[in-house]
Amino acid sequence: MFLGTHHPRLDDKGRLFLPAKYREELAEGLVITKGQERCLYVFPVEEFQRITEALRTAPVTAKAVRDYSRVLFASASDEVADKQGRITVPQALREYASLRRDCVVIGANTRLEIWAADAWSAYLADQEQAFADLSEEVLPGIL
Image (tube, rainbow, N blue to C red):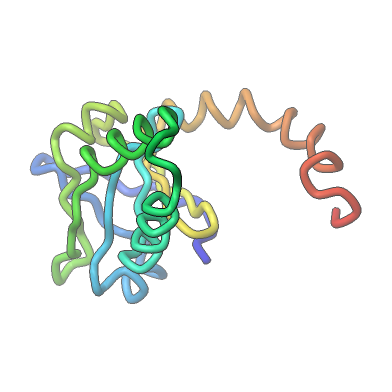
């Protein structure tokens, strides 16, 4: 499970330090791809394989499945962290997420998300009240 908020910087070569607490879990490799709201999703290989299987069994006749699969897989890049715990974020993905220098890496349960720092701040400002308002609807009787 991935939790927390981290503030790494992207270097001039497009490399990003993974949060130290997750390096071991991601040591065997990971997949970076486009996510919603212009962030990037970072999946452990095993989790990405689970998603692949779910999409494999989804009906190819459904246009939404075809569209989602095309973008997800076409933009995916498999990476292995170097000895310092850095991964290279491909240029096309950096452009998609508007990543420059200051980034935010958040834990999102089964994946990490990489955000441009300003985009994350704006998203969080918009969503914090909605988060408070939705707790009963999303998790009834739990919180």
